[in-house]
Image (cartoon, rainbow, N blue to C red):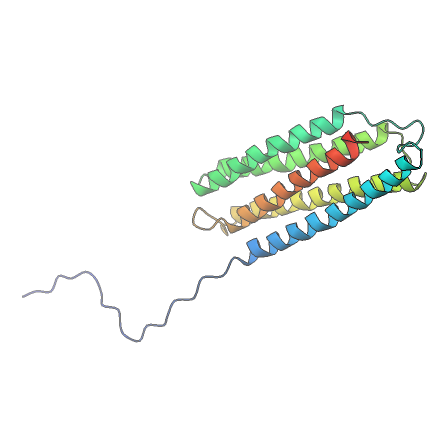
Length: 203
């Protein structure tokens, strides 16, 4: 009888497959996010304590002649909220191997990051608050500047993961890099909500 089997038998001495790499990038990103939350949270808590002491002493918190309009902070909040939806679009697109839409979404994320930073710089200019005028001004700039630096790093993270995906490192079967970038970005939006409430709303 003719053997027409098209499958080859696996020999007994085949080496075991390489174990799957643990989620190193996701774990590292999660640790970085926790560190950022603790760091900026501590800075905001210190800011709130100093502000409370100044108000209890009978002084006003903002120096004379300084105003903080709400138009720019609220627009920055809307910008970052919309960026969350676009990040969801990016992760979903990669999940269905739609790389074109994924790269469009990541490009919009970076563009919204630039918009947030530009609005922040414009706001600081119209606030008429000298960074070295007194300790209160320095503290306000420290809180706002810390979050701007975080978002700039988040933009670089998103752009780098987009480049790696373009090079074939990530696909529908392995979305670790995009998930890590999304996590980092979501934490940045959450941190802005804290800054928005502490700096721009309570003033």
